[in-house]
Length: 348
Image (cartoon, rainbow, N blue to C red):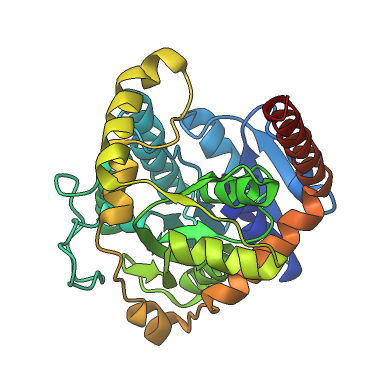
């Protein structure tokens, strides 16, 4: 039996499908009322609960040989640091502790490239770079760094755990659009009117899922493996989508100093609005940060590989156009009506 925490998420659902295709019996931990439509056609066991519930985690590891811990809280703000720490650190400790108690044969913890110390541009991020809560970017990165070090402690106690650190994950099957997925979807709807300087190292969700399985099978106890892809700027992202849909859109480039002001304002009001802002100081730091990363270790030791980013974008756009077809068409019609109404008013 395989346990996947966060199995209903973007990466989790793709991983679960791959495991089932390998004839594995899969049990997932999902949040109460979480949308499971991405897994509706698959035979699996679902347990609803919280990764911080020690009794529950111990119970659902009964008969489990293999654990993939994906459940975490992703954030680009410093808002609610206590909640982030509780889920991303205490949740990890809870899973690791009970996996050790249950004598689980193999565990894979999905950390993040953001857990590494931030390097100045020009240097390549690899597994020799220290995991640094102090020098990691943002609150999220710091919690992932702390959690990674906690896993190392449990490895010393005997837990056979491998750690994978993906870069920015994109791809098809993004049913509840991730931040990048939402950006792509908004572009297809015609809602994106701006571009900005910067980009990041992005990797296909399918390749990360495969990398997790390879880490469980061939990874060494306590080792960290970077699962990365290719650098993609926002300019190139929009260009490739435009070529795919055969419709180019002129975008306004927002200067960095204006983005910094917007991010500052968003950071101030994020607590009052109760929602994730569009841009924050942390997210700007990330897209301007060093995005050179090497997956050589994962390639050499696990047999990991990643597909070209243009193939990922091609598949992603195809999937969004299919799955969100009605939503995209409604948005385009509404936009067209607004444009027509504006022209009528201006011609009066």
